[in-house]
Image (cartoon, rainbow, N blue to C red; front, top):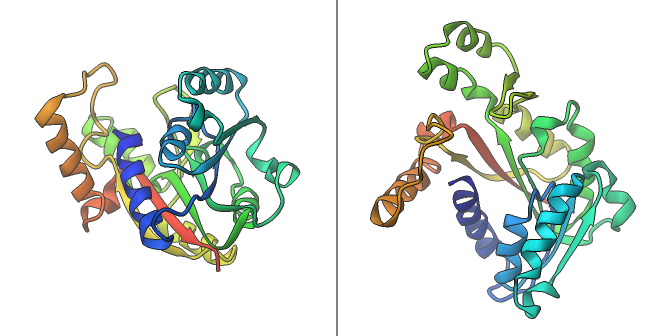
Length: 240
């Protein structure tokens, strides 16, 4: 659900900012096992994936190996830390930089974000996916965990589904940060408005039911006030 919604939102921003058919230079920082890397390479773009976890890099390489040669040759996978983009790449090397599901694991994200912005060419797109700090009370509240819900109103940390204590970001704070690194916010979406409370073991719907669910989530993710209470925020800034 998350990957599909973010992909649709990202495509909207790319198609609205770059000429149709332009082969973009894309960097995915914290790529995981490369879901977005493969999607963008299949769309014809040259994509570099950066990931610190060797197991995830290996999984991404295995998935890439099953792709046609024309897609494989458009992808470069690197094991490395998100803070080290300046070691691997020159400033202004990319048209699009993704950083999805990473900031919640970074205690002080400003330096990372500034480094990502430096990787963008003028007019380049920075795509961030973060845990929504303004909606932290919803998940424990729906579960009847009132102590955690109350604490979430004033906090910026939460326990994720892996059992790790991580941090969340608020829209107003990130808006100021993006302005400060010369990649001001141009658009933002909510991700997982209705499905965040689904049980981890729940089976995904199929066919028409899945399409209706995606349509509802996609509509909510761009409509006030629903997007403001989504579990995740997808922010898109543009390098000045």
